[in-house]
Image (cartoon, rainbow, N blue to C red; front, side, top):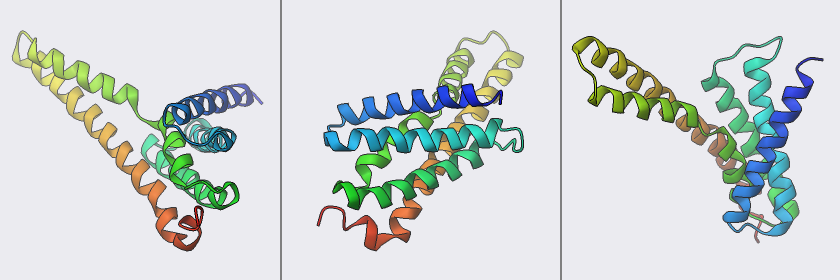
Length: 162
């Protein structure tokens, strides 16, 4: 029961971020609720896969699975609301962007430039490479996980606006 409140908070914040990104992306108003719901489900799933009591998955695998679920939900919701799946897909993926890894990678790159000796340079370069590779891998996992349902359910995905 102790995971319920953090999970609810995670879902709410993901929904707010997705709806906000949907607003600035100018998706139709009828898509706001669905966009927030899909983002909340996907981000909560990733949270459960990473922090849940029965599963301690790495962020890369959890992100790929959550992106696949987001893509699948977007494909099957889009014909009902008569909006392309991408209108739900991209804003719903936004909360899963690995900002902390990008931030740490950039910070380590700056510290590489201002390092005093070889030891500090090696330490910060290692941090730069590790965080940068994790960031890039997470983004690729999001892209691959989210586009598989679009190509798998092609007949459903491309009939939303017909």
